[in-house]
Amino acid sequence: MEVGRPGPGEARIRHRAIGLNVPAILAQKGSLYLTRPTLKTYADRPADLLDMSRSLFDVVLSGAVKVEIGQTYALRDAAEAHHDLQARKTTGPTVLGV
Image 1 (cartoon, rainbow, N blue to C red):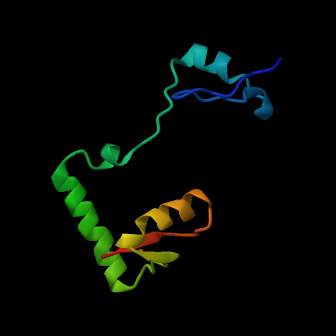
Image 2: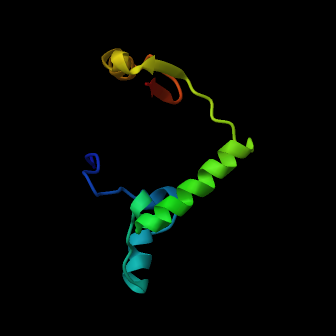
């Protein structure tokens, strides 16, 4: 049987691949909810986001985590940077400098 690709908000579970009939098990035990967490899931309030951001930057500034910048562009070259990103000519983080 040919099955199309999952649409937005859908997921495909290949239950036969692991030898379990997952849908039958779930039918006996209840419902299954698949979620895709976003930043808002973890930092719903602005104060939470600020606190998490401070913690992240503290770790980066301490040197415990090194951020490697792939390429930089002057802000006036933003169109070139966009073109390079679309053309997959970049790797890692891209920074636009002021």
